[in-house]
Length: 122
Image: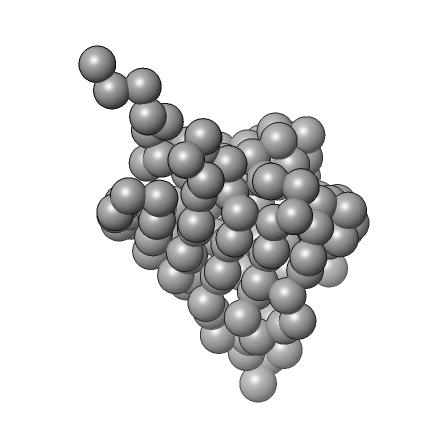
């Protein structure tokens, strides 16, 4: 019997927590020394920095609409659209996400690739 975590489902549950604005569930998914890197910005190291960013950003939730998701061992990649509301404006942001998970199913690294002009209006 295979007792390995289902990394596909872990990331789908993680995405659902973003939509529900469940910061505690989001943070429970990370290792203590995790890295979260929105590629146009500086990386965040460790759960304290990650939590601070998420709490300042998540508002009433950020729904992730996953279009495609693939898993290979401890690596999960997804193509998705995140719906972000800030300053009275809603943006549908195409994102490519890369998640590295530990053998027990926690996120040790997360990188999101997207075009920053959606926020800057450039």
